[in-house]
Structures are given as C-alpha cells and as structure tokens.
Image (cartoon, rainbow, N blue to C red; front, side, top):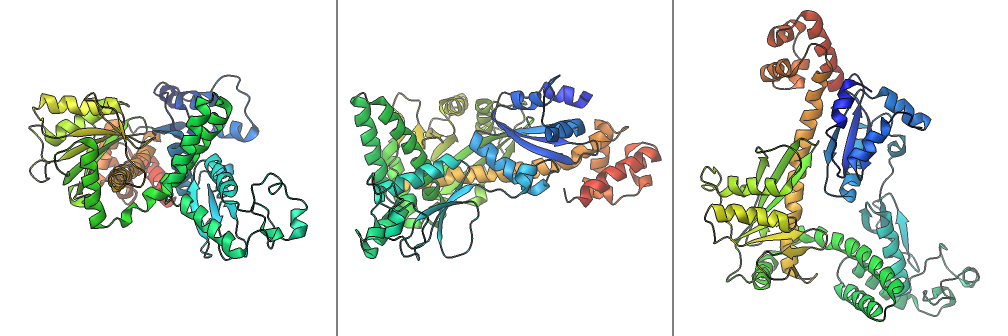
Length: 490
C-alpha cells in the first residue's frame, strides 16, 4: 500500500459512488462502482485479502485512486459505464466487451409481435423502451405487459399449433394464444399497441389500478401478494416515468402555461409562477461540491439564466449546507446574479425536507418572505412542504408534473456537465502529483504559466524548469508525464 493510498483511504465516505484506480504514471487502470465507497475500496487493500488473479494484479499495480459520490446506485451504474467507455481502463475486462443495459424491443411488423430483452438498440424500425440501469425493472415490465395484455412470450417466429404443445403461458391463461387462432391478428395488434402505450407512459390508469389492488390485498392481510404487487408497481413506475419524462422536451408553450397553472393550484399560489428556479446539489471526487441553478420562464427552460456554483463554505458532502449557500449567493446582499436574473416566483430545492428547510432558513435570515419554496423528492416525484401541509403527489399525466420534472432533469444535466469539466480537469492535472519534486505550489505555478497540462506538454524542458523553479531532470519527468497523458486523449 503506497502512502498516497493510505491517506486516500481515510477520506472515503459511507456513500454510493465510483472510484478510479491509477498506476504510477497516472493512467486510469480500473473504474468501479460501490454502494458504499468506504467498504468497497478498503476491501481491495485489507491485509490477507484473497483476490482473484485479475483483481490481485490490478491491486498490485495501483499507485493512487480517486473517487466521486453520487446520489444512488442507479446513478453509480451510469457514471461507471460513462467513465469506462471514455477512459477504457486496462483492467475493466467485464465492461470492455461493451456490455450495455437492458431495453425492451417491440417489432410491430412481425405477424404476432412480442417483447424481447436486448442490450443493443439498432436502427431497425422497431420500438425500444429503455435502456435502464436496473435489469429487474425491464424484466418485471416485460412480464407484466405479457400477462395483462395477453402478449406471447414464446420465441417462435410464426407461432402455430406445434408451438403450443410446449407452451405453459396458455395453460395458466396469460397468453391470448394466437398460435391456436383464438384471436385475430388485428385484435392481437390492438393489444400489443395498448401495451406499448402503457410502456410509453400514456396509460397511468393502469398503475392506479395496480395500486388499488395492492391496497386491497393489504387490507385483506394478504401481505405476500401485496408485497409482490408493490415491487411490480414501483418497477413499472420507474420504467414508465422514464419515458414520460423523456418526452418532456417536446412540451408546447400552451402545455407549459397549463402546467404552471396546475402547479399553482396544487401548492396554493395566488397566480401561476412565471419564473421558477430549481437548484440541484452534487458532489464530485469527494472534494468537489457543486450546484446548478436552472430557470423556467412560463414553464419552459430559459438557458439565459442558468448558473453554476462551486461550493465555497466547506468541503465534503452536506447537501443542506450547500443548498443554504446557493440560496444566500443567489439572493444575498453580495449577489451578482440578482441584477441580471428575474426574481423567482417559485424556488424548488431538489431533495427532501432538510434541503428545503436549509433554503427557507436563509430566506428568513435575508428577510425574504415572498418567494414560495418547495422541495422535490426524486424517488416519487413528491412535492415536499414544511408549512404543516401534507406532501403533494401530482397526477402522473398532469402538465404540472411535466414542468417540474423537466426542470429538475435540466438541473441534473447542467450539474453533470459542470462535473464533467471539473472531473476531466482534475484527472488531467493530478498526473503532476506523481512527479517527484513537484508539490502543490510548483504544480500551481506550472498551471498558472501554461494554463493546462496541454500547455505544459507543448513547452520545453527549459521553460518548465524556469516556471516551476526546478532542475532540468525534474522538468523532463514532468514533460514525460503530461505528454503520456495527452497522447492517451485524457
């Protein structure tokens, strides 16, 4: 274990995230994800740990590592895949085969179409639902629509009577049995189209019906059935929600105006909020803490007023404190934003009650009482309040839900864009830390002089030595390190 690793291990948080292992030259050799970063990363370096040969070889090569925190396991999956595809680490054998997440494929041109689970989305005229980071979500949705709409699950291209001889779906009455001509092709296609509409988020009443059955089962004390329906309900909600939200960029102005009207009625505003601000807090590499503020005007995103924030008042992960800082920097007496951005008619904190209370406390301190403020809990798209009223769940097909989820997704996207630029810069610059004789002060001198590692790579050894105040031997090592990194495209 190197001294760098020993110090890094002390900073690992008990949070989900991704970690990047690097060798002595600074090259990223492995990217992994973890439900708990502290437990997962420490497990590599425990004395006496019995690793598989590939893992042992990787651990023996690691000279340093970095990490980033995310909000949940699903995000860690997507982040891991993104990092692996970008950096192509040597030891990520399992992901280097371009393994992808599951999606559902629906080819209506087949005589009796069916749903199939696939990992590659092709431009072949078929419809695709997904991909999704959770395979159980996709498989649960497939099973549900097959049973509810009588869609065949057999793999036969043209199902006939011989196909039925080995079929169990018809025996348990879950298939409409087109192979036995119990249903015409027209009737079957109508069912198939209805199933696709459900997966596309256009039939929320189906989810309401399932939720009602789940409640009835619980009231009958049939808890086993209720639990199964609960798991199915949340899986379907996750899948249909993704498509519902994905369509939101196509929102028309009239729908957006209707949405802010519905939103005002739902949360008790006197008039529709013409200007809505939404703030998202995110953490990167355990040290970077950033926030994004996005704005909607008349229900539609207005990028003129988007803002990024680097959290300055503390280090580490503390979303409520970060939310408080953003609220103060947005509306405090020293704000440089207020003069150029319209004042919010509604302020949304992406997160739960603690983030909401942090922002409201700042507003109270500043004497601001005319900006309605709410939280938005991502798991259920629930509007969170702290004024004594119950939390609010908007109707799934409402334009109000479309407005706020689109804005929240914009906040996520804008924060991730900022993350990417910071992450790439951090990974590039950190290669200098591996050069003996280059400390933090000399590193800053080089970056100030040459602007970036790319600028350093274009400099001569003499220029590097003069800028950093080092001898030519150290300067040559700097040049080797940055040249190797820039050749790899990092």
